[in-house]
Image (cartoon, rainbow, N blue to C red):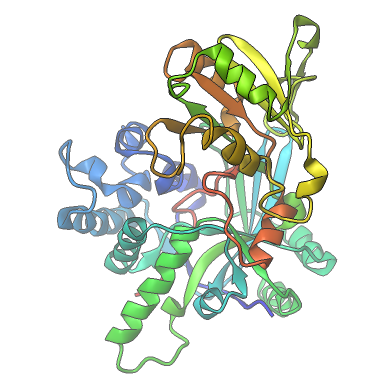
Length: 428
């Protein structure tokens, strides 16, 4: 049984929502965050990435950074101003990116259910990132960015969501990246109905935001230890999430670029690949361009990756790496992923990359940037070879989580991203 809880959201007024909202803290570095927030004192990046308001070179984990986050949050509360709902509510949050649309429910989820694996995970977290967000939450007394979650949908839930979308939104804007964001407050009666309906949902799945969820658990433990009157009903026992029906969630590939061929010639590398795959070169007759309706990106219609085919760019040419023994991998939810095959047959044995999380010779390109970004990296000499992968499906992700397994590192890229600052959950 999944538990969801209404909460008193802290949010910007409708006419300031676009200015306040910001990309997630972990998809930009300091320089990118500073550039995005430039000239916009209301940008939530001043709270989520407060080092942008400190001198260049500041340690992003220094005491003054967290103090600046709290100072900036208080300033934003006054200047936006941010409003706190009078009563706990649930919210419907719709996103549109190109032809793709997804609609989720913003609610609070149980830390207990995260700890006991009713909320399933598929990714390992890093202690330094957990330390950072745990301290950030405790310092400002709020969770300011939601965890992106999925569940197997129910028609009864969909009906309430659709009914809510007929009301007037409390936020409605299109961000600079072209993604539109619309939020509605759920009526009190329907909120209670949704809470009851989710009791029929057996499991929830973290899609994106593992560090936020893990940090919420750690923040709860710290605040509980400080509270001699802890009851279990305090707001810190819950964390902010947006829950989407699994059939609406879009996963894009997380592609790879590698800086060199591990001291091999191109000929030797291709020869080694031909022994591991059905190797073919994309010729001019294959160059029929098509537009992906989900993202608007152009693809080579013949050579676009599909399950069991990895696309490779090398020396100005595209190649197809056909995986010959797909049937033999079908019973293993991890081994069946193309990203696993790439690691086991190419990155490790041929290119010498044992751990993609730590090796400096490999980099990753989110699928939202298209194949053009891979070509550019190779053509400009920043990489020797690039690999375009077929995206992991939501069903594959859930199967791996259900098996208590961990996805290969850097194997999923979720788009569109939820925005920080639109709905915050006060915990202290």
